[in-house]
Length: 294
Image (cartoon, rainbow, N blue to C red; front, side, top):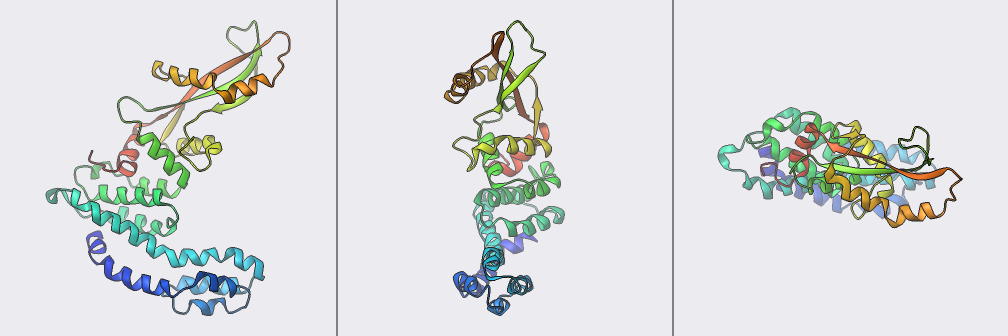
């Protein structure tokens, strides 16, 4: 099935792109409040475009302009699929012919459907392409789990970037993401049983990687929920340099400098980590790595 898509998509793409070029998005926005928005899409082949246009024509002008980005999705969804198939067409030749197999429908069909929503994220499109290519390679196809399609649906572009960074850490041993909590505890407590948390889950895994690194705990929590990562309240010796760097970082030291400790109190660091699960390793191997056969 997907062979056919890769083989004939150039013809279909040329037709869809020609029709898309005829659509002036700025003109569409100007028509948004004129109760004729649906007419602007008569030349589009998608019935969904007409539905969106009818709804927008009933809205006040300002709100309609805000929501007219939906129409950009209608215009761009085929382009998203075409770009992904383009990328696959360039890389499918890397799979030896004797290992090339037709992807199962329960993987290919929902993956292609969901590509419609990824026109604005190259990272997610790349992950879908990796998933589809892996499902076409009998050397790694057994590692392609049907849930991978749903997982891709439930991660953000930033989380896709984070997973790319995690994949770059390699596979020598279990991949770990260290975090620290800055706390205030009683000075005479060797093992604190009461504390006040000042900074929770400080980490630098998203710095210079994600568009919104301040959301790192949200991203890590979601990847935990999806089974790609798992939280641990202990750490390995290999993580110690990272913890020590965090504890002496300018960010943490600035926080500490602004707090005047009460008598009998001291600062304390709690070290913990997220680790990639076995399931997560398979997901990264199939969907994130440039070549699942590596």
